[in-house]
Length: 169
Image (cartoon, rainbow, N blue to C red):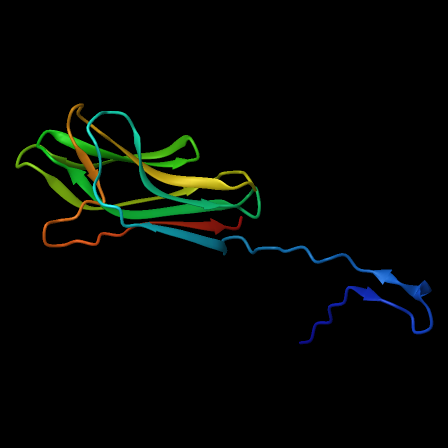
């Protein structure tokens, strides 16, 4: 199958036969990935000792091609808490709006607890302007410490990731 694409057709002898053809509109098949944006963070031990929600530093921005698009947000990172009776709570924010919260590592006894965490959600930003998604955190218990992207004494070099996928609708 062949396809001929032209911007303008002209007659052989003059420009009086000019035909303008509009530029094609880009269409995306529903359910297909339109674009992917990813970011990583290697900063270690972002901590918080209060119940105020704070940024972890892990964020990525995407500019959707259509207001009907969905954005699938995926993040993985290491984090946890320092003492028993405390819990870490992780969030996904779209700009300044909390769109997901999830309790993370908690320990009733035994001291600190750290481990891998994953947050995923399908969002509808309804925008064609740049949108920033970020991972935020806070403590369940005031005065305790929650750590993000914490290294272990023998295992270092943690890499936290966030990936945004625009999905056509």
